[in-house]
Length: 182
Image (cartoon, rainbow, N blue to C red; front, side):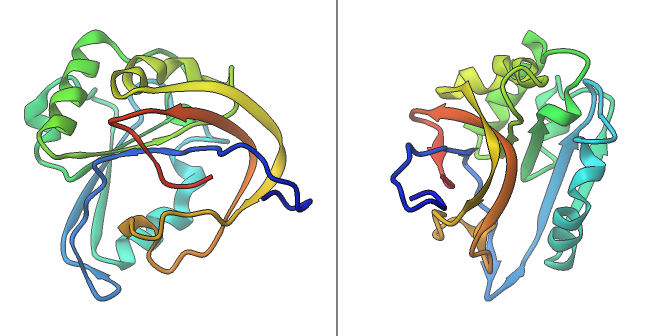
């Protein structure tokens, strides 16, 4: 239900294989790699997510950024989760070697967190990756939304009751992707 009380279509946020061991409310160990290789923007890139990064670090995670590319499975295998987002992919799309390395990483149990922006705002640069997992950027919802439909079985929502978003990039998610927030 939207803030207006009317039922709306689900707006899935794609997360594939995000499996971080938890003990109570604390992380045991989690190494996260945030890819900024394709052009990080100051307004919607890594810096925008400082509060998220701080929260992850307070739970025992290490968060590392890279501008060196993610085209080798060996690099990715050192991490539990890879984060890609439109604001950190402003200048170019993911290449075939990168897509192949990410696919191998996820198929070997690594987590992939995809954070989309509105359609046309660099989201097409993520399409080579997300399409490998049955996900596609399909629309923009040009409004402020307060999302409370969360899959609370996912460790990433530990202690989270809502997410506030502005100009949402709506994704369609089919297996093997899983919608965890809508």
